[in-house]
Image (cartoon, rainbow, N blue to C red):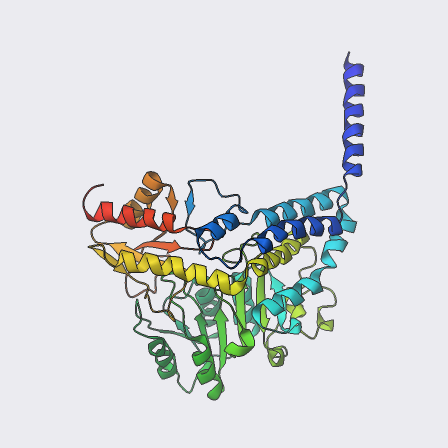
Length: 439
């Protein structure tokens, strides 16, 4: 009996193996499947921007019906075509690990070129890193600075931008000074003036978030970069929250370096980010991780030499770019602003609500930070989740944001193109309930 079971087990394994071989995937096959899925996105009536059109786009996602996911600022929902492509790439790796890895890795330069076009840069200026944290660390640790040199950062920078500079301060004696930004600021010019007036003869770098993670405030990056360059300073920008939320043209912005996370608003699987370094800075910023032949790369590729890496994730980045391009970046940006503007204008009418995010078109896009008098952030977030199945991010002063002088406490609501006005109405209804003592 035991021998019969072992024989049956071996036969079952062989049949399964044969089936897997017959169904072996190819990169061309996966790309063809993605192209067919994206054809549905492209052929949807793109002249319409009402809920009929966006409902069809939302159907491309795996989000559960009735679940209002409003936390793209932490991690975005992956579109179905991108998710299925990623699974297929991993299956390719399982079927033929080394050869499939080489095939996927062979797409690197094409993906880099597509990403560069997406953000308004040259391919030679783009490295594919793992996330914005890696990019921020690379810039902070890779630039030669000496004791006493000064770096300016904003008060609401994410710790993935703040802490690399603070580490340099501890190790090498540089000075990190924080520029106060109001919540919300009165105008873009107010932010630009704050950075310009903070410059001293020791300042070497201005480092700021294009969109801060606490309040969702957009900074006037082009103006800050222009003023920095006029004084011989470098301008580094953390763009973790902007890639896929608003159109980016890095050459037009005039920044020296710009880091991006792809798993938020671009809705790519976690594990990919982009680093832009202006071409004439490649010889001034050292790579942090090196391996064989790293010195042979004279452009931004020297910053992402990681040897073995999860190439299926990198391959899926291309599909995420294709998905956004199929819809259109301007159309996505308009949808994002319509949802968030609606939220802010209606929330401002509710007694007890305080907005930390301006409704000024140049100061905000897809994220809104707000609080409600006498209601803790935890209670606010949990009320929305338990009562309406609305998922938001809690914002609470403390160790996570120790430098915030304004005591931002409440929730952060991220509205992306796969969200709906009905979902925003649920947030507003929850706020009204708590404001009126009905919950």
